[in-house]
Length: 242
Image (tube, rainbow, N blue to C red):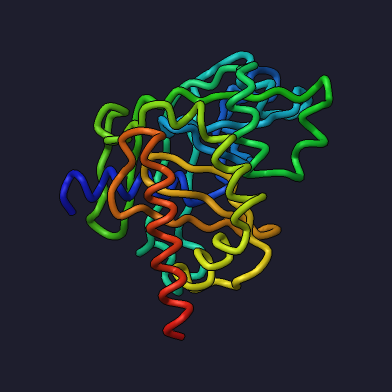
């Protein structure tokens, strides 16, 4: 695998999964001891994981004493031989955040979590990634620094995202079903758009998530409409040919 292939594999895993295993360090008296737990996750435009954690949870208490964490994104589900599949561990530091944009991005991906977001003992956390460890199968193993992950940036897209997502869900819901059904080969009903970044768009249907990649990364928010329209034309053509 080339360096670009490796960094792309990490990005695809992190953006394509909606849950991860969070590793923290339990403080005394239970620790010091490694502690792993299942968490729901969303990724910001710069690939920083976003978490919603209860202050009563063991991992949150651990973060209060030691901000260094790891998150394992496991892409091996369904494989007969899981160790041949791809997984990536992000290593970084977790910090509480009150940024409403990060909260919106997380809750768009996990709408059922909105009830907890209003509780006083729940807070959002952002993980500032320092390194990533990719295992893409036997012999395909590499450490990558955060700067090597090659996350493309699209000017103004983070600020425009909520409006774009709302517009697609309310005015072009039929197109979203075509994206899922004709371009991703999934069930063609019940899908909602939850996010858009430079490399693709995210969809959700009840407990299922899906991701549609763009052929060319967006360079600015202004390019989003043209790209989404082109995908719609392609999806409609596939539907007509079926």
